[in-house]
Length: 160
Image (cartoon, rainbow, N blue to C red):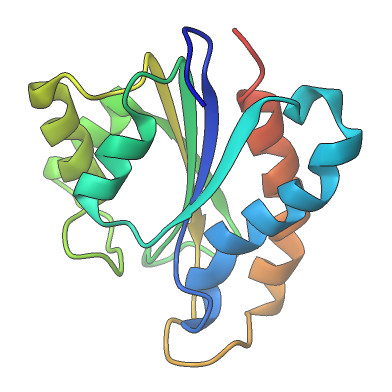
């Protein structure tokens, strides 16, 4: 899909790393809703492993991109949601949020800014996880957060 009003929601994560699956689970929830939900009509729903070049390619030229990713944050309860915009991520350099990816999302945003490959509006829904080991079990709080986070991502992807 393309065009001047392209809208995109990307779920970053790995289904086989416990709470890291929250991004793909949000996309699955939205895919199930998409046929009957006019707000989701025309919204691209994608899953990513968080690889920077892939993300830059996915969101380049989008009017709005919403990214859902699990993070580790000391002291934050599992399932807690942090909503950040691109400028917030650039400020994370001093206090990076631990991710399971090769480079932090903030570094990918900085690279996208330099290369001119950011969407017009980028919002990240960072979901606090607790368990990132191998397996398909989710922390109950993270599992319970999937639907509300999917609905928030849907609302953010509305045409501005």
